[in-house]
Image 1: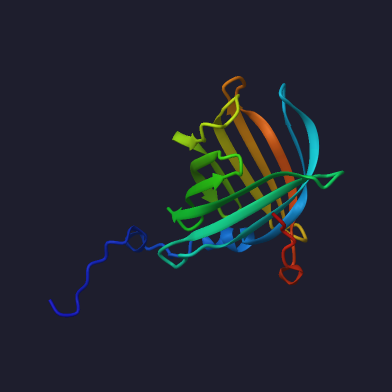
Image 2 (image 1 turned 90 degrees about the vertical axis):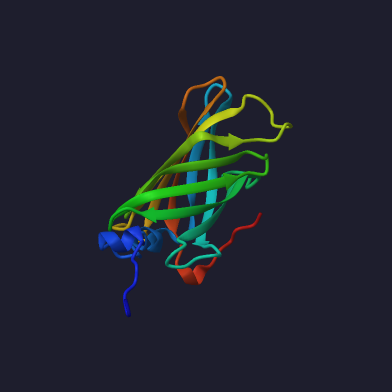
Amino acid sequence: MAGSFIVDDPILLQGLPRQAPLRLMENLEGVWVGEGVGEYPPHVPRFQFTQELVIEKAIPHSSRELNWSFRSVSRNKHTQEGLHSEWGYLRLHPLAIDHGRIELVCTTPHGLCEVDEGTYTEDSFDVWTRYGGLSRPASASRPYVTEVRRWCEIRTENSPISMEYRVEMATERTPMQQHLLSRLRKLDPQQGTQLVV
């Protein structure tokens, strides 16, 4: 049949625009800076930190491959000593115009690697480890992390745009509980990044 074609793309079959997740990522993409509080009773006492988070398009990135990368550095608020860094990727799979599934992979210099899955909306995402989504090297110290949850909410009505970012985790010895809470603001693109690893 001349001129006919097969449409097998689930997004096109639903009549949804392919760029559905971009509203979230237009707001999320960029450089974020701010402060946070961490603790993990009974092993880690309360501490304050500064954080810089950079989110940008990853390669490959196209209308068919909605991939972003992120990197984050946290420092002691008072001494500026480096506390933690992590690198990872986000993949978005739209299910409707304003929400969908999200996958996040993340690794740290200590060797902990996590694979998280969850959902996103136009101003938030919520992911957690599933199906044995954590791995670590043999040299990792105990207690082992057994589960991680990451939650992010963007407040576009604030000027500058702000983000609340929370990390919860469980270990062999402790149930799921909040570990980190950051309140970040988005930098103007002309300010660029100050990230030093």
